[in-house]
Length: 355
Image (cartoon, rainbow, N blue to C red; front, top):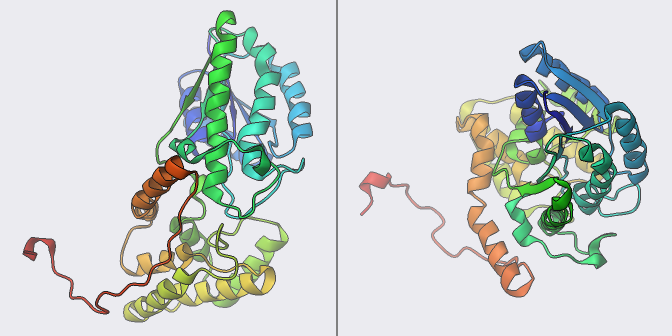
């Protein structure tokens, strides 16, 4: 008998790839997604690759606990039994947001709602064959500290602190389940998937590139952004978890983007980027973060778009490591101010020619 698998957030990223692979190997896969249109599109892509795949879709909005209860009841009635539950869905907003129940978004969506949903799925799992629960966690749990005073909001909002707490919660919950469910044969494990290029990295330069390449003129960009704002769609590359009025790095990279655009003869991407910046500040008082103009600058330098995310990650590894060490030692992250006092212009010397 084929495995019956339920995946939250299975319409994109890790969840989608997991669903596609399992369906291709004969599993009966159910996707539980907030966006039903994207869920249907995901199923269509899976069936295009695997025409005989058994895939179905259920609604599930983890930012609304009442919605979780209602749709868990629907899933319970429809499925009858379940072999594998994969708690995959998650969010990483760049600015503080709240669930319908008033919880900080990452705590609510990444941790609290999956706890509720998992408990509501236990009766189905008890009927399953060698049932198991998988929680998609992260090495970022090292940044986390369980602090009940932040569950309803943080001041200041440090996005990775909030993310780390939610991922630490995933691991602790998985460990408790593993202990409590062992006697009835249900296993529970948490995993760190590694650095994966998924929509959760929607705020890095690659996502900004996808945005600005949609438009051919500044006027088209303004019309397009106004439509996206009206439809409440995500617009990438704006806002920051720490800076409130501007990102000081943006002025530097914007200048370089302008110079590189002039050098390569660009008359589209840079003007479109500038108009996007103007519209977002005028309409939402949101400024570009450092990643927005990196997109066009990288493009003008001939760097393939697929390398934008690896560059984003590589450039931050030392800083992330420092944050982990700082928080482990003293439960706080240091954001030092610094002034560069080295030479203004330095001649680049190829590595093989350096002493």
